[in-house]
Length: 232
Image 1: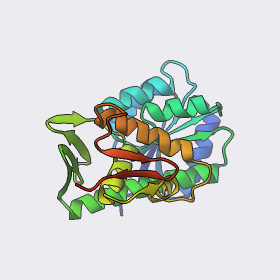
Image 2: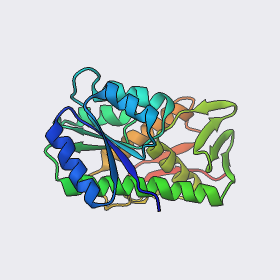
Image 3: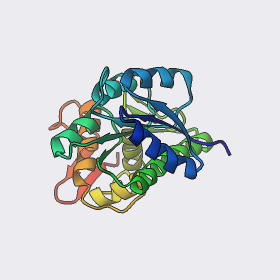
Image 4: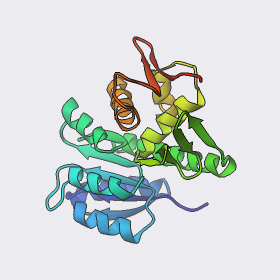
């Protein structure tokens, strides 16, 4: 089995080395970058399975780097930052990050999140290889093999986490899934005070595929319960 490769992007060498040490103990290969510009070079020249991306960095910070990465790449991104305000977390998720970890963090927790995202991404790829069919919802096409989403002929850019959420809702058409169910199915970990995380991703998906939030054709909000996609 091939080793997974994680790109660690942080201007603090000590933090890079600590994360690397824990990942190597899990048999995960690491590539390092000290800022966003260097990270973009590493992505061009290496096969990366996940990116750990610090927000506050010189040259090119994590926010700008994430925006550039998301233009052409669906690699899972975990943002790390000393900022613990909800606004910082929401911003990171809005621009395409899949997860957000606040400094100082427990290295074991970060590694667990990294492994969960890599495992989830790998599992979905394996399912796509076995099942080449597409999920069709009106004019919305969800390709399980390429993990691409089209609305008619228009390509819709979605992050890995957004795709996973959309896929789960599409596979459970007619069934209302609670925020906790969605979180545990996508992140593969217990739901603990993560309501905002799911809500932000759902909002991002709806903004990309719906005509207007009020004119919801695809993802419906079941107030006080969760979310669903109606059966035809």
